[in-house]
Each structure stands twice: as structure tokens, then as C-alpha cells.
Length: 486
Image 1: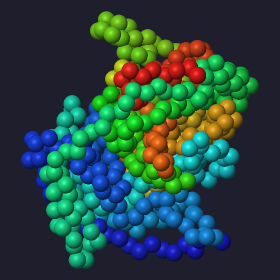
Image 2: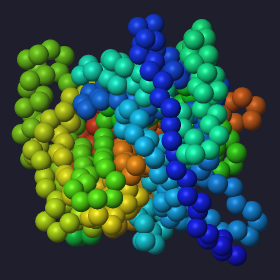
Image 3: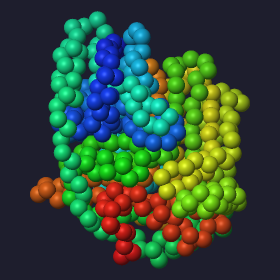
Image 4: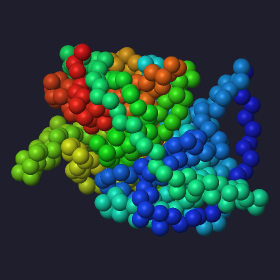
């Protein structure tokens, strides 16, 4: 029996803002906020720990609604993006906007295995049964304004309620402030552990050759092929996230707790450097959306001279430039679905960005959004990101499913927000750990690493690149641990 759809009740939010900047001098930042608020439900962070643009970070908690929503017997769940459209269409912010990019709304993650909206893709199930969506509707959050080095300049607490109703925001704010004044809980370090490859090196190289064969046959131009790794976890997900944040700070990091389909407690710990989309402004002429695909990776050099050579090698790599060009063309087509005619443009090509231990090639692709398109429409047009599918997108996703043989869950999906003002920011969930705690206390971490395969790819080099990308996550799990090739 299909669910009977009803129009959602209109929700207009009005908020109070509390300046917490004086607390910054006493050490208030994202790690401290997460540790002090760890006991609260639905804790989530969108965290610009390092690198451009690094303008803000959010920590939200105590959602007023959660996703996925429970369904009764015989009730069919509506499509995820359709449900988001329905819920967010009734949400609006009344009055002056609070500081930062967010004015209450959805914060959460979408799994890669959702596929492309409106397309019937037969994607396999993930090894760990992750839900298609996780997150909630948030009305209470901390926002941190950052300087160019990523340090906190200002901090605010925002609490919001339905406009023109009895307001309990002051009580909620007092409770949060009390938490932030409490002593910071002691972190538990991760014990040394070894990471296991579920796809041995020789098998991943064979997968690369399968992708190249499809390219030779004209089936695809490029496909992003990944493999999975796992390790025991001796500590909780928040402690592990803060270790990952220290080992591999990135501009689009994030933390989110969720429940696996089988009921196990899970958490998503992302140190992503990649932006799927950033959209500002309400439904009106002149809104722009930006996506910044990454293609091309090389290790940093140990000194200034060798690092300059590495940068020059990457910028001069015909293979990496061609790979990026294919994805830029795909993103232009995706943005064309929601942009005004002639409203898509490409920025500097390519641009080199540097993160801890790595350099990447990137390019901005920008679209002028049609007035009738919502933030969810923009998300649907771009999801999942072309840099982690390949080109053409649908056939590449079919090829990925055939070659990898299992779903990806949240890996290469997206984490971000859509707010009551129609704004949105989402990352691409690469460099991301999935933490799982099962009954009896056992804990384990799983993650994927991969890369884009073109005809000019060399299997040995592609396999080595995956292990380079794994290094920061391995370091977070244990400074002495190294991936094994089992």
C-alpha cells in the first residue's frame, strides 16, 4: 500500500542568536563543542578544518525530525529526494538571517546507492547495510566563523522555534551553554591495529583492466573504481573522528551518527576535500551553484624542491588533465538541467590544490539556476558527483556495479545541508570512515579508496594511488598501522 501524501504543515522559524566569541579565547572550537555535546541526540558537524574556502563550521544537535523516518507495515517509503522536497517546501525562515550559511533545516547524508533520481539503476547492496539517508531537521546549532588559517574568529549559538508561538529557545540555549562550560571529556586513543584489504592488489589491478576493456569497446570513457578496507576500532566514533581531523584536516569534513538498517549504531567520519555543490540564495533570478570536481592526485614532495617537481608533474600530466576534462564536461551537462540557457561556465582549468601530503587538480563549474528550481532539484541534478562515477554517468555506474560487485553505502555519496532559506552545501564522501558498533561491544571501521580509470591508466599506478589515498585514514586508525595486501 502506497503512503497517502498530504501537504506538509507550513513551518516558519524565528531564532535567537547568542554571541559566544568570548568563549573562543577559552578554547571553544569544533573539537571542544563536539566533546561537550556528545551526549546530545543527532550530533552532526560540517567542519572546515583546513584548506580553502574554510569560511565556517557548523555543529548541530537535537533534531526535531529525523531521517530515515520509520514506516509501518504495508506503508511504502516515498523516494528520498521526493520526501526532502516535500518537507523542505514547508520550511521558511522569518526575519533577519542568523550568522553563517545556515538558517535551520536539513543536515544529513545521502548514500551513493540512491543512484540518479528518475533512473532505474540496479545497484548492489553494500557489505554493511547503510540506510539511503541519515540526518534530520535541525533548529539548534553552533556556527564558527574561521580565518584564512582555519582558526575560529567568532562563535555563535543559534536556537530557533516556530514563529509567533511560545518560545522555549532561552531554556534550550541555557542548557547548551551549561554543557559548553563543563570540563572537556577525556578522549580515548585508538589502539594500534592493522587494516585489511578486502580486494587484494592483484584483483584491483584486474578490475582496472576490466574498466579499460569497457573503454576500448566504447561503453564508457571513464569509471571510478574503488576497493574496500576495514579494521577493528578500539574507540568510539567521535574520538576517532577527532584523530582523523588531526591527521588529515580538510575543508569539507563531517561527522554524523546514524543507525544501520539492522539496528547497529553507526557513524560517518569524513575528511573530504571535495565539494559537490554550494548554492546560495532563495528562489530568485541570479542564484548560482558551484561544483568543484577533483581529478588527478600526486604525493607531496619531502622538501620544497621535490615538491615543486611533483606539482609540475601533476599540472603537466596529459592523463590527469584529460580525466578532469571529461568530468568537467559531465558536470556542465548536469548543471545544464537546472540552469538558464547559456548559464553554465567553467573556471580556471586546471587549478592545483594542496592538502596534507597530497596535491590534486580541480576546476570550478558554475551554473546560474533557473528560478523555479529548488535546492533539492539542484542536488538531484548533480548527485552522485561525476568525479566518483565516471562518464557517461549512468553507464559508468552500471559498470562500477558490475566490476565492484557490492554497494558503496555512504562512500561517494554526500554530506551537507539544505536550509530554510533555500541555500545548500554538500561534499562528496571520499576519505570517509564508517564506524559500526554491534551488540556485545565489538567495533569496526570500514572505508573505500579508489580512482578514475581512463584508457591511459596503468593498473600498477592506479593501485598505488589508492593506497596513497588510504594513508591518512590508516594513520588515524593507528600511527603505526599499515595496510596489508591480504
